[in-house]
Length: 260
Image (cartoon, rainbow, N blue to C red; front, side, top):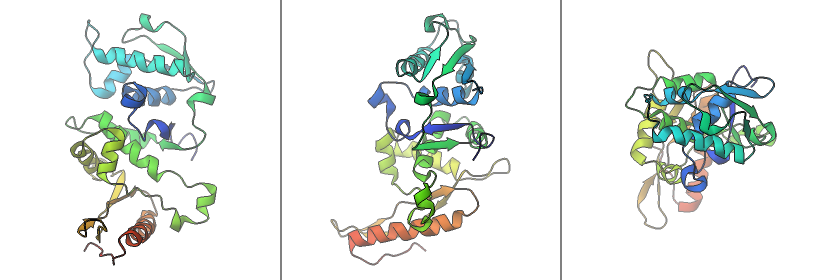
């Protein structure tokens, strides 16, 4: 893909874990990172405002700055301390409409490997979500699933059947990794896998069959399979089923029943 087809490469190490617990920073890191990259110039400068970040959440601004305002400042301070960016003015001088001049340090800001690409189309689909769905949760859920679908390495391209571009971790595992309730994750996935007259689903969901748990001797469902809604997704689903069935069947030592 080239720069016209996507606007950011998001490092997977920030997606596949709970950054609040592990790094002590707000999840506003995600939208801040994305907006910095979205408005990036060829000279690696970017200009954003805190109001622009608030617009993503639908927050109202007020004379008394809320906690969320200072969370954004904390995110910027984290990026500065980790030499991802330089900010050209003191953070305590910023207000909602201050044009924050940012110098991006590519060697620390950009991920050279193990990153997730997010296109403008994907981001806009997330922005279209109805108000009942928290856009931050939706963005994180999509980034998390996409980070496991990813892009095949040069080696994997030679053997796509054994390296399907598919996600099939359980909702429970996902909940534990990013500290989001299973109910919230299920709501996000419902949105991401649903097409309407105004938008296409970002993900295709494939419901799978069951296997016998070797410990409890009871039937359990395989995790559902999710793939990007892109040409060739049928092959990715087929390869993912074959790979998942092979792994689970070896563990259970029982024949696999495909869901009808």
